[in-house]
Image 1 (cartoon, rainbow, N blue to C red):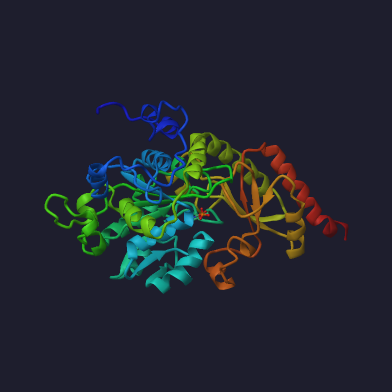
Image 2 (image 1 turned 90 degrees about the vertical axis):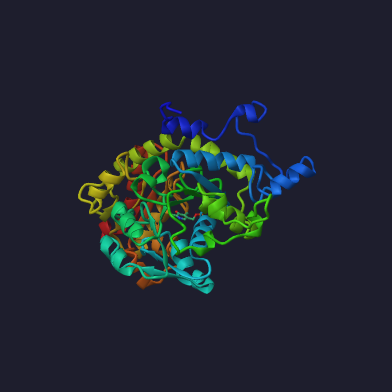
Amino acid sequence: MSEKPLGFDTLKVRAGYESSEHNYSVAVPIYQTASYDLGGVERAEKLFGLEEAGFLYTRIGNPTVAVLEERLTALDKGTGAVAVASGMAAVAYTLLNLAEGGGRILTTPRLYGGTFDAIKHLFPKFNVHVDFVENSDDPETFRRAIGPDTKAILIESISNPNATILDVEAIAEIAHDNGIPLVIDNTFGTPYLFDSFAHGADIIIYSATKAIGGHGTTLGGVIVENGKFDWSNGKFPHFEEPQYLLRDQATGRERSILEVFPNAPFATRVRLSYLAYFGASLSPFDAFLLIQGLVTLSERIDKQVSNALKIVQYLQSNDRVSWVSHPAADGNAYKTLADKYFPKGAGSIFSFGFKGNEDQLKTFLNAVKLFSYHANVGDARSLIINSPKTTHGELNPEEQAFAGIKPETVRLSIGLEDAEDLIADLEQAFEQAFVETYSL
Ligand SMILES: *Cc1c(COP(=O)(O)O)cnc(C)c1O
């Protein structure tokens, strides 16, 4: 195999699918089936004994879902992936698979609101606890916060809602010095803009609901791994546990997940434990829709990034805006990191500070016509939202302050419309919000 590896755009259209294996169907077929014929007692024994690869039951694997899994594995140059029903399922299964039985996750307060709330309030009830670093911008604070029970560092490649960027390579090194993996939620980065594994990630999480699907129609999540992390270093005994399910069919000897699936032990363990028994499976139809989205990922993201930069410029020159937080914006504190880690652009989701009072902000949000007012991001449609009261509303005021979310924050996710129309929409909404102040 000395052939030149295929490029990203070829893989996003074709990886993981061979038409000759699917009746020469050009489009990826939707395998709308709960179960699969076992074909005979001998084959059934081999399938259930994991001696032969094949599909058994859609809760743990489906050919349409497998195309999505293989395509993302190819795009991120990983060794395996598992798709689940939502981004939150991907977050939850990842963290439980790391710290089940008790452990700590080290993270930053700059997280998706649902993730923040889950690890702070729900996970401790499962004996999975969280530590937040004091200063996310200083990688050494991660080193100082690692304890004997810390099982992983979790970060987001571009944070929500303020689009800040961490020094990923420095944090990866600290994780690896301490024998723990770096988990990156790359939902905002996307596999197109950010190469997580090249910068030190061991596990990648996606909410495929966002840019991967790209059309705001479908929930999904994916966990990808690159097979490099050493799970046998003593911190993860559940990866070394002999299991009856994994026994050698000839001798009956029980084997561990690491022994049987050395290239993708993490994703396989999520599949055989969490997907199998907690059951948040992605439906074949939803996998099909997410695959449709992936086909145009780069083209959409390029246009969204260029649209976003035009809107950043407009907002930066707007005296009714107190600040604009986009990492590639001139003067932004994260510009150096953005240039290093995001050479193709630092995304199209960012926030700005609205200068008026609360009533003016309400008028402004009610006045936008093109922007949709709702909680999703990464949609082909442009979206606007007042994060402190909505997407991050589960954080109390102190938690919001800790996460750097100011009360005047407005988050934008820029879509595929004409930038000029989006700017005109914001402008007329600003005019309505500030009209009374002017007439005084
Ligand atoms: C939306 C989102 C999630 C959760 O994903 P769902 O698909 O909505 O469950 C997790 N992480 C990030 C960064 C997100 O934006």
